[in-house]
Image (cartoon, rainbow, N blue to C red; front, side, top):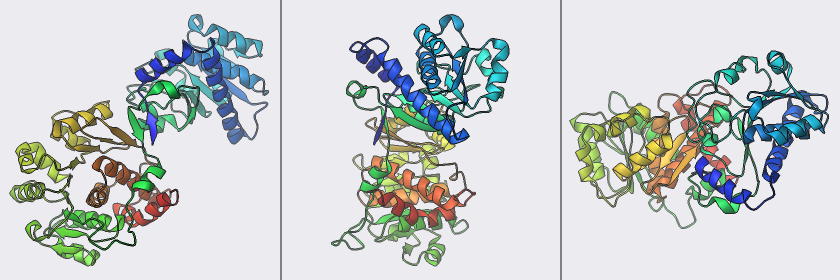
Length: 480
């Protein structure tokens, strides 16, 4: 797992480290890392480094200093470097002196737009992790002139470092170089950050436990259940799927199919779409009623069951069986409207809630807001459940405060039925015995990988994501 630390924690760690190292050493180390990545981007986009043109966007404070020192290093490689000083009176003195000694230029305001339009690379050093809110008007005025790739120093300016939220004008980076530790913005707003690269400046011993984590594919591979020589169809965990209706069987077909493809063994389906499920998945043991389904190790309940009396009875039955429950879609709406249905649940039995933003608002009575991690944590504590908050970046929070983020490749999952596929996979993993927080993170990651494989650069329906689950599992397992 890759750790992510809030900016307050990172600043405190930096302060402790700064007290032990010579003045300026950390900045020059960070700036050298920026210069290395700047040279890589120049080579990728122009085929050379020497003779190219780089413009530094320099604000007040240490991020501006990092950019200035990086410019000085780039001058040594024959790069033409010019700086835009947004706050000349507050520019980092040592960094500015180093740039000038190396032959770098400071641009007058009248030359900013033209220089940016001719640049081969722009280095964003406007603000750092202590800043919040959108770009100020003078910096925002530069955005229309950015035509070259942008390398962000620590984070794209104008993007909130702890939530990834964008409240106004902000930089969109091709690549972000961050120092010492990954910050929440890198996980929560990949569209703005581009590729994120970590430069080690020696913070490791000062950081402590991370505030949230990214699951690596290797973590998912290690956790994903596969049959062993002693397994049979029952020993791998039997998920029960309660979804769909006779009129709208799609949710049942997708969720049951996802459970089948996520693992081998046995999957049970219970509900009025039993005939459609059998027709698509003859290996599923399908019955018309949840009370006739037989023994399962976990229930996934909700998609398409309806929000009336019958749907409520299905949910209450599943909650009362003493096995983990994954509640999605209509089940979440039922809990929101009738929270007393949770009285049927054994308090020691795990519950996983999988809302999208609208369902989250119904469930909690409040919008998700800018801080999606805090919102998911609060809901997890309130309902004593693992909360998988859907969105472009999926946030998974446990009642004990653990949180993880899954950052997908692309937006291919923004399609009808993809949530049913995710819930079916998750139900299968929980039935197999995975701890629900880890199961939710692993399911979200393989779900995203399946979407990327299925899409291959073009839009794909949920059924295509479903078909790609085995390929995604193979790709993940190949790393283990």
